[in-house]
Image (cartoon, rainbow, N blue to C red; front, side):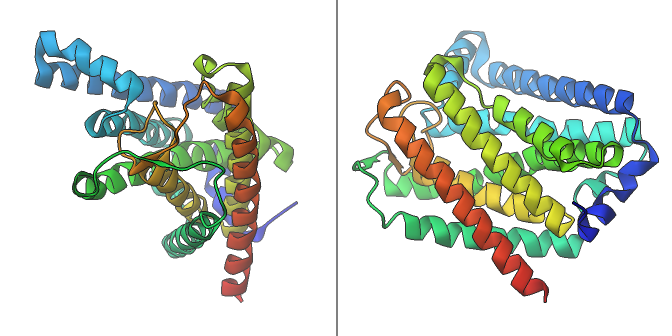
Length: 296
């Protein structure tokens, strides 16, 4: 399966496709991401002081207040720095090659974000099976909205640069089969969302749901030759899940509404996750259709 746009996107990675470089690059990116997180913790302690620091770190474990949620989402920005550092230091190519051509990036992002946003808005007309609970007051939500959008924009870009940019490019430069360059980054993306505290059923369903999203994003990247469409899809999806209706408890601090149940209610969440997976596939198909029609 060869897509001309993806072939051009992968071309810069073929100069240094050795697996040992990729392994070291993966480790370097993870190390830089970890240092970024440590740096944020240090900043929290510098601002809150020795006495207030532990309380803030504890709030970040739940992320059920606006500021703590912003900090938790911001911890993922380090992935972008890690992917860029690995690309430059170990593969000796420009970090801009991770993005794809600017025109494709911009076009793919806006088409995918708009299509996903409209599709999610329409899907909200279908009964949830529960009544969302008001969380933040509208005024407070609007005050945090601009900063929250910027932080989520950076978080989704960081994940796309690492998984669909760096990993997908370098694997495709070494292996011809999409079973490698699509499945491996998507599996890692899913496993990165594994949370054993949610119990085995919900934890592995979350891995499956995020892994499926990773496959859809990998396909959009392959067909468009940039991370733009995957980034737009990811951004709109996360805005809905973090800022509009979030799961009660963890990472609910920025949501206008939350679910009336939390991660402990696996029996309720399992069918909802299955519905979300079906919605992901439908939105992916819509984005692909619009992009193909727009390309003619």
